[in-house]
Structure formats: structure tokens, C-alpha cells
Length: 458
Image (cartoon, helix red, strand yellow):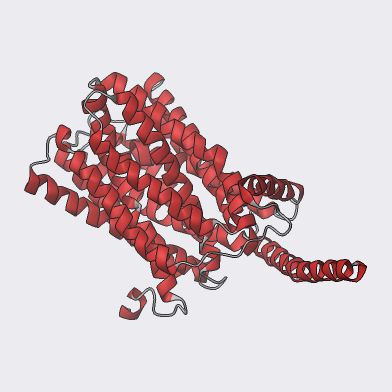
């Protein structure tokens, strides 16, 4: 049993997988401290100084970053594949995000427009970087261990989240940063944490070869190649039918996953949780999510990624229905939501790594950034729609109606996932890889023949 807790023991490229997972650990400082815990409150209370108006402006800032990443992800992914820029783009977006995160500490109180102008590109870079990070998965793993490797990254991310929660609490106590207006130093800490975690992937991860073929040089040529590759993917949609089916199912249940990421703490607050209880609640979610990611890594390569996703969709459905039942009594006991919170944590930890692994099985190695760009676009697009629709129904109709909608998201995702055939998807990916390799081997020969003809003419 102890051997199973050594995740790198059977990997031939353990160092490379560790470096890849370090980026997952590093960027938790942005998703946890900036997006989830600190910046929303800091923005409302210090930048806008008006709770209701701050919520409106915060939703605009968050949605704008997500929408920009949705629009840019597939083209940037195709560009990275065609030019061999995946590592370059991963590091560039990370560095920009780090710099902008540290800049939050420099924004004067009340300058909400400047705060938005910094947060939107920072969030955009974080979201795009997530896509490029995921696109390395098929290259640092095999069809036999891709689920295990995916779970390692996910688990390291949750380890980073736990460490960040502890260090943040310690800094608040040691430096007297409990007051919201004193959180500037925490944003600098978040940026430095991200930067430190990027060192290992920058040194160890290898840049993948370009699959651009005859693509023109420079940014303009890369953009042209990017659109050309997207057009090729659309034209060959029948060949990648399982990818399309999976992304449709993924979109449906991501409506629910993204909603819970944004509303879990708000729902806990409705159940009477106080400030310290909310912090402990987030800590509980992180622990259970980390456990789920570890367990997922142990089982999904054996039982299959699609089966694993279905199991965690079942967890999500039960959790959402339990929340719905708890809204029926007028004054439900608070302790019941602590129990249900474990379902949220298990769902978050398991559904992410198993979904990423399933797409990785369907992805040809020469289209990793492109396909994972589509994956990121799907996930973030679901976030915009799911959070907005849940919030509107919750505000206009009521909590029970919004939880019925939430349950529907997960049920629809499970039904659509039944249409996905993982074996066909993997066969299509391998066939595409063989064709690309053959075309790549023939291309230099054609180039050599052409040069020979020119020399003879001369």
C-alpha cells in the first residue's frame, strides 16, 4: 500500500512529470488566492468601496477574462502546435500573470478601473496558460499511464492549495494583515509563489517540435497556420467524432462544476457559516479534492477514464440533489452542509483529472495544444454561461430552482457522455499520429528532391 503512495515510482520520465506538476502547484496562487479567496473581497471593499456595485464590476472583470480566453484559445493552441511554441507560450503567459499579480499591491484604494485593467489580462494569461499546461499531458505520458500522470498534476495542485492556505493564514497573523486593506503583501506573495514554481518546468520541460510544415515564418505565418489547422480539424470532424462528443458532454457538466467553484462558499454562507467557518470549509474542500485526485490516479488507468468520469458525475448528482433537499426545510442544521461539502470536494478533485485524461487519450500528439485549447475554451465558456444562469435563476426564482438547474447540468453531462466511445477515440488519435509522422518524413525528401532539381537546372 505504501508503494502506491509513491506516484513517480514507475515513471521513466519522473523528473519531467514532476516539473510539469510543479506548474500546477505554482499557479494555485492565482486561482486560489486571487480568483477565489482574496481579490473578490479586496476589489469590492478597497477598490470599489461599494458591495453591490463591486459585485457587478467583479462579474464583468471575471467574465471578460474568461471570454477573451475562450476566443483566443483554439487559435493560440493551433499556432503553438504549428510553430513549436508550447513551452514558450506557457512560460510567457506565466511571467505576465506573475508580474500583473504583484501589481495589485500598487493600485491605490478606490482605483477600481485600474484594478480591472490589471486583473483582466492577468486572468486571461492564467486561463490560457492552463490550456498549454494541459497540452503537455499526452507527451509526458503513455496510453497506459496518462490517467496516473494527470492525477499527479492535479494532486500537486491541491498540495499547493493546502500550503497556500496555511502560509496565508500565518502571514495574516504574523504581519497583522487581517484587515482587507492590508492584503497587498499577500498579492506579492502570490506572484512570487507562482514565479518560484515556474523555475522547474522552465528548466526541465522540453519544447515540442513544430508541426507547421510549410507554414510561413513569423507571427503572421503562425496565425495563418493556426487558422489553417483549425480548418483542417473542422473538415476532418468525422475522424475526431469522439472528441466532439466528449467536448459536448464536458461542456454540459462543466456548467455545474464551474457554478460550484463560484457559488460553493456563497451556499455555505446561506447555511449560517461564519468567516472562520468559511475558511475551514474551503480547507475541507481542498483536502477532499486532493484525496479524490490521488484515488483517481490509482484507479482510472485500470477502469478507464470514461468510467471514472461517470463515477464522479454520480457523486456530483447526489451532492446537488442533497443540497436541493436541504433547502426544503426552513432552518436546516448547519452540520449537514459540512457533510455535503465533502461531495463537492470529491467531485472537484475527481472530475478534473479524469476529464483531462480522457481527452488526452483522444488527442494526437501533433494536435495537443490545439485540442486542449478547445478543451479550455469549452470549460471556460461553460463557466460564463453556467455561473450567469445559476445566479439569475437563484436571484429571480429562488435557491431551490437554481439547485434543480445545477442537478440538470450534471445529469445532461452524464447522458451525453454515454455516447462517447473511448476505444474509437483512441484508434482515431493513433491513426492521425501515424499519418502526420508519415507526412513529416516525406516532407524533407520532397524538399531535398526540389533542391536537387534546382542545382541540375543551374
